[in-house]
Length: 105
Image (cartoon, rainbow, N blue to C red; front, side, top):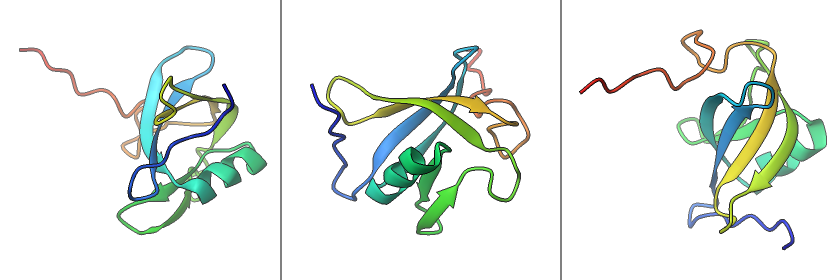
């Protein structure tokens, strides 16, 4: 099956970033067609910021870029998985991963 991501009605697709070495899920962000193309061209994760309504190169200001090893679409091609080598924390809090809130109920 050819790689043909399906963007939602807003022109976006969710992208899950996973450390290529540890397999830890690092973060989730949104991509549009332009940010996906830029990611493929640069080899570094680029997203669409819904709050700022602009392209967002992960790590452009912090230096914590995500070097992309591979991009895979799920079976429906409506979600992307990016295997990455992070150069620093993924989370804006400074945590390695954005997924650290645990439900202990």
